[in-house]
Image: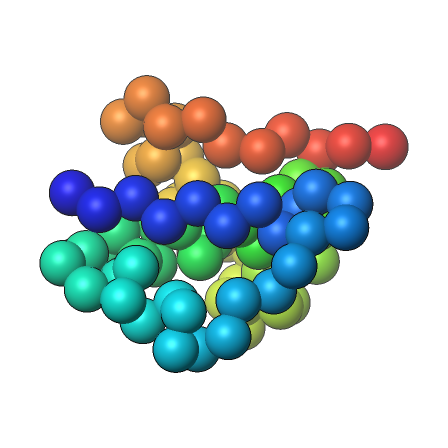
Length: 82
């Protein structure tokens, strides 16, 4: 399993160019890439599920279901930050 952690939610974080991202993704499954995208988007949205769902183009219900699966697998999911 390849885990891609881009600390984009941290202040001052830099964005990676596509030619930097693709090599990090090689060897990862589509499910792993999707999970990482969901978690990173949720983190960037400060845990706001409605906003993250909008950014991802998902319904809030679909996002909630994905989060439930991740949490059941022991994966830490970003919590809502006020």
